[in-house]
View (cartoon, rainbow, N blue to C red):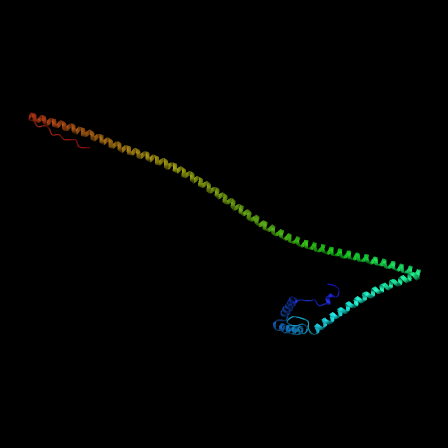
Amino acid sequence: MGQGESFVQPDLNQTGQNSLRGCLEQGVEQATGGAAASAVLSRVRERLYLLQTAKSAQPTGKYKQALEQEAEAQASLRELENRRAALEEDLAALDQARRSLREQEDPDRKAQDEAELLALRQQRDALRIADAEEQAARAALATVTQTLNSIRDEQERRRERQAAHRRLEREAAEMQHDLQALTQRTAQARRRYEASRTRREQAEQRQQAARQVLLTVSRRAAVLQQQGALEREKQILERAEAACTRLEQARAALAACGLMRLLSAGCGKPCGRWTPHRRL
């Protein structure tokens, strides 16, 4: 903002005016309350409408006259500034002509003018040097200010990084604790798994041994069953052989009895009675 511009009213569009009006209304309403704020806003609007229109927010009344007078004054000021510049140029040209005339008329005056001109030039050079030094000092101050702000920002970022580092360290410690607990649970689960696998292998071994024993017992039972069947068949065979033997004996006895009957009938003597063997 240039010098004197802070006293000039800024040009606001409709959006800016609405925003400013809304902020004022909200601030007054919060500060004074609903009814009082409405009354204040009503009076403000009444006085505002004396200065600008309600719909288009265009200047009116005294405000419009003041703006027109300001525009006229600015135009007059620009004209006067142009006239002053022209007069300054004319005065500079007249001064140059006078110096030239004096230099031509008075050698001492010429030397004095040259000395004054040299002094003015030296003063100008000193002012330029001082202005350059001031610019350099301002630049250095701006650099120092920027550096200070950068240092403050860096310190703030460093504090944030330290806080984040401490937070990460706490989270890492918690994660390490959780990892240790998980490792312990994993080791316990692994030991339980190993014990379970050992018990399963032992059970499988016992099951395999039981299967071998059952297979052996089944084989022995089959052999014993076969032996029992052979023994029963042997007994049946022995009984059949004994029956055959008794049958042969009975046949022989019958044959002998028939022969004796025939002999008895021929000799007139009865033969003895034959009694067959009782079947065992």
